[in-house]
Image 1 (cartoon, rainbow, N blue to C red):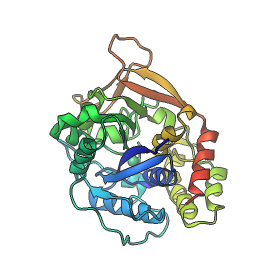
Image 2 (image 1 turned 30 degrees about the horizontal axis):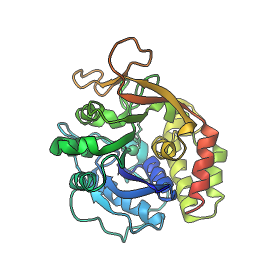
Image 3 (image 1 turned 90 degrees about the horizontal axis):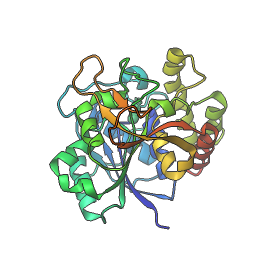
Image 4 (image 1 turned 30 degrees about the vertical axis):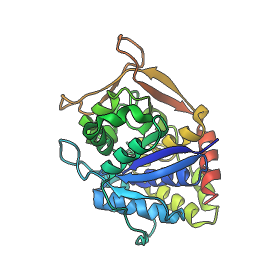
Length: 312
Ligand code: BDR
Ligand code: CA
């Protein structure tokens, strides 16, 4: 079988970095390009971080594009309090030698979907949905050509992490999320409900360090840094590796379980802005538009992740 074609849209972020490494280590996936978006940190840093991660994986052949530097209709909210000043705080970071590709990420998404056969390209958003929704607004013809969108965002039982009601990726650009959730494209959503079960416990982090490779060391040091915030906040054994859930799903979908339900994005209320109103209990007759995950086999997830990172 030929490798599945994906575009990773991302705002690295330590967990984004691990997700990108997992994808680049996996021959089942053909990464057509990586598109950076403003999110965890401003765009100049997310685009630089994407280059750092590609170089770490030894994949200087990957096309990395800079995308939108601000949400569609709002001011950017960032998350340095979680990810540090660089977005990839923890280890000493190299200066990337690799250059960005010319052109805008949104144009790359549009051109790629128009060029490839319809239904053969999967979008993997790991940050705010600004690039993806902007592409759909600018080129509505590409919407029907997307195979599937597998994204990290939202929450139902966990409710919120950036506000009491909203998860970060959706909160930063709720108008973009609204466009994506109304697009009619097959959606698989990794909300906090599932990512909070993908916890970096001490033995799991040590398994990365024990690889004795540069990617293994960097992943361990990134998770060491990233953990401190969540351990303090939730009193948990480690930090949730949110974004790698998206890539793990593409590789081993049976690790995850969820429900096909209706999800609407709150864009009006100041109090609950960016809330993913998921009809988990099916109490409305609103048509399901998303496979909303709720659980995962955490040991299976880390076994996959460790085995793949060790290949780099
Ligand atoms: C999401 O927000 C970011 O901080 C992480 O990279 C992840 O994509 C979790 O809410
Ligand atoms: Ca992210």
